[in-house]
Length: 222
Image 1 (cartoon, one colour):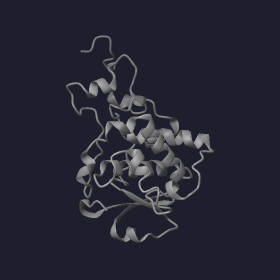
Image 2 (cartoon, rainbow, N blue to C red):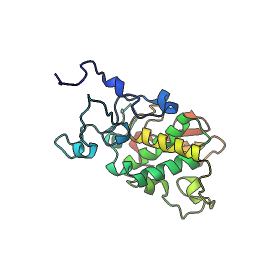
Image 3 (cartoon, helix red, strand yellow):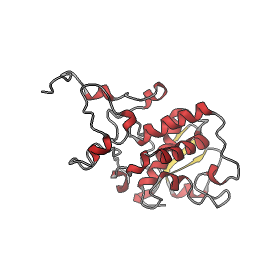
Image 4 (cartoon, one colour):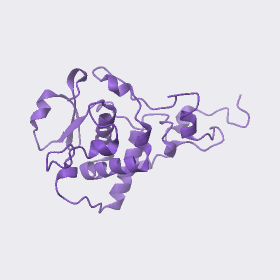
């Protein structure tokens, strides 16, 4: 028995810790990645050990978020994200991508785009950091991975409220509070008003808002 701590604590009580109300309906994980300190409960029931100290202790990978794997998903989905994705620099790159790629979408659509970016970080065919994934081939005018990064338009964040939401979505998905099973291991998406040739070689997963999401067949790294 834990002296001085509630005997009636339920892990589901942690579900919405640190989550902004606008994201609450999307939360589908009772816990969070141990490195997502934004979601660390601070009540008397929980240990006060720093998350990074805990990770470096005897538990190894205990407490790291690993997405639920379904039929058709790929082996690389079984790996937790590198700890660096929780850094302020990486989260800034992620929030910036969400803002420019999906700020006109509902929060589910923003979360779906976030999941694709993080899936690429997991996938060994892509760079191993968020910033490198987001800005991959950004010198190729209108031919890079994420269009905002190479469209020649200055990336000016004018809507601070939308950017704050993008930051919240970025951390919630990175920390595993939100994982969309219908998006699963998707690494690609396109807007509904375009018809890219590469889409015909991939498995269409779902449409959320104005984006269609795809994953590669048979564990491929396309």
